[in-house]
Length: 112
Length: 113
Image (cartoon, rainbow over all chains, first blue to last red):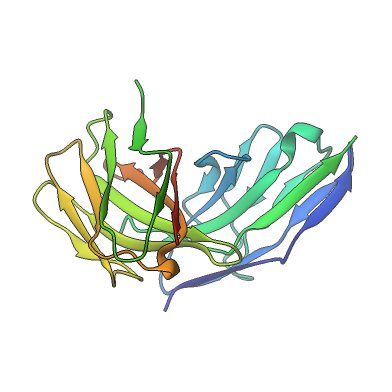
């Protein structure tokens, strides 16, 4: 079945450091890929998405490129801020279904 | 627009008690979902509803029932709560054709003693 694997956390960085959170997926066909972010005590909100191969999603300085050849959708940010501290979830949606399959989440802590 | 709202925010139950978690969206979305979030497990789909009047099981439906009361509301019921159902529950909705973005509520934290 479909699955999403993302790097284990937690990840701790200093402010202005470079961030990469790895995400790979297993799915038949051409899934849509998403990154969601969950700030402490809140629900999830969409951070960015990509719907076809080689698409790049971007938002708030975060980027991820849909790589079909490596079945990956790694999240990157050039300079993290304390306010980026949150849990990040990679997810996919396949075919005609609107259902999402989530990775287990990666907790990011950014220290001043 | 309030988006997706959930009530209550927090609940403590004793084993065997029942309760209903309420969810409503004001975005005229067709599809609605219930997830549970447990440490180290990500989000797991309990039930979903593709449209008013239809519901289907997700990955972890045992011990839960749902009702899609109308297009706006989708409730989750625990008939006889168990400690294993201690979790944070999220409701979500999707609506626009071709857009699979799900919009989440703030969650209900449930503790079953």
